[in-house]
Length: 279
Image (spheres, rainbow, N blue to C red):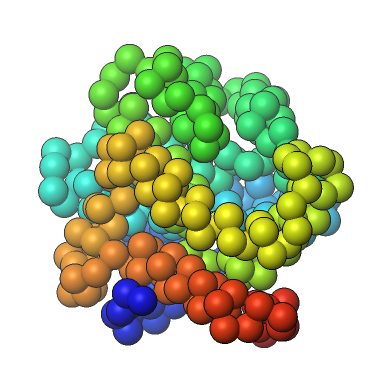
């Protein structure tokens, strides 16, 4: 079993606090861009929170969106450290897309068709708030990067910096979710959705957990390394430059989770549910 370093993202920011996470997102953004560029992000963030609270959907949905934003902010900061700074307009739309990429949750319905429903939500929101249609077109194309089975080479973005930001959004969607402390617990909820809506053949929860490890080692690693151009590596640059921690805390958190899952399934196959439902 691979040895994982002791550092954790939770040592840097309170991952249980949406406010604390959003402040970290702001700081990461302001390393490279102006506060005026961030104001629209803040306005949309506040609107989204208000809408979600009105519809009283699960708290996990908001946390997932903010986790994705945070991961994206780390990736783009690391990229800007190592390369020429991405245009503020592209970086800003990427951050907004991370917030709204799963905005189907705002209508309180199961998100098994979340890509198209999120695009519809973004369309309505941008139209009602008279947000530039060019930004809408870019946000919609970026949402398509969050579909794990979409051929990203066919996404209609002409500029290299836009395609790169799309890869960052797609990567942030993966590492932001899989690195969270409650990721393993949330697999049980995912299983309930799979079973209820018959999204795929109905495996047992044990089979789903085993497939999660296999899925990461094959599909996910290929996706973030090849399809998303390895932009996850810029997280390490970010943590090294900003915190003097020479590690990719996202990848280490994911591997720590899956190592624990593998260990539980191997040593306690009869009591794995109790061991995975951690406090």
